[in-house]
Image 1 (tube, rainbow, N blue to C red):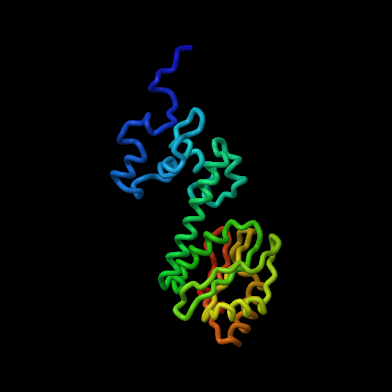
Image 2: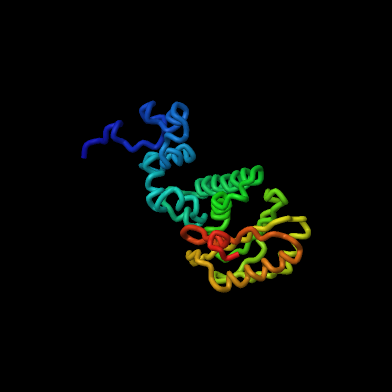
Length: 235
């Protein structure tokens, strides 16, 4: 078998690429918006896997998780099952996702974003969609509907989380909140509100009304588009 030519060997470093094809150079010249998901991941990782250049490795990773959303939604254990993903790379991806969550929360806290159902939906999706168990969340807002505190109050089995109105009222009073947004996830993936969800929401709305606090919405987060009780006319 003839020796493999130097130019035909798998590339694993940007230094071996033509200058105008290197993701870092493209980033500097054209900006991040001009790069593909694979190129952005390649910059994050820096080097590829054995026998594979970094962009090809990133493309394979995206393919394994069906896109960038799947990559960043994956758990640490799922990431580590992929060839070429060790603890350091898994940590990189988890850190990027956590930074994205915190940036979105910061944006919302500095604006009137919590009056925009789309922004609230996006924020809650990043927080809750990939939780393995059902989690019940309360967003405490001030009189201008700015975020005071994000609270994960109750966790349950894969099917349900117990919700106690008294605990929510206590939390609202402690933080002097003027309004509340509720949310919980359905680990089964189906975001459709159940009858139990509607009964709990009605109980909480009545309890909050007694202390003159507005319930603005209740979101159910699943695998598809999150459901807003307010948009459904269920409040």
